[in-house]
Image (tube, rainbow, N blue to C red; front, side, top):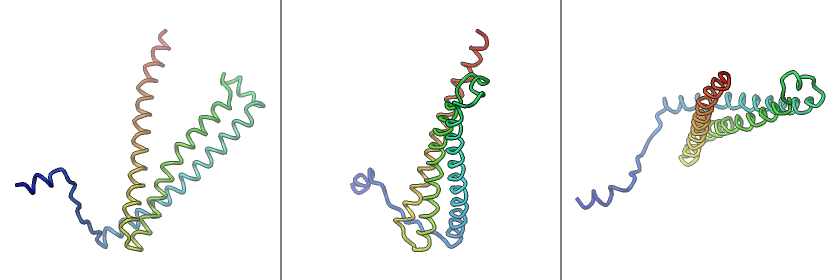
Length: 149
């Protein structure tokens, strides 16, 4: 009874082994994660180029008067989106590289670090999803009310 009480607050460490089938799935997942992360980096680069292009041509553009606000503002928004888009791609790329390395070397510490990066990616995406849902919940009623007034 005393043993149960003293161990009740402690986390118990469990041993988990990866079967050859699980290892195969993880290797395939790491390959696809690398591919998606590289596409994320390319997308981020394109967004940065578009942002700088919009900020550079903004003073020369007639579109400023057409849209009613400066194109450089859109460029800044693209730059912010590029920064936000970079982090999930970075975490995913780290996950993939470390997962491959851990499976090849059989290194538990590197494997744990790869899963830490996967957790960071999903946490970041989850928080951004919550922020966007909140923004929509605020924006939609605001737009409707402003149209009625």
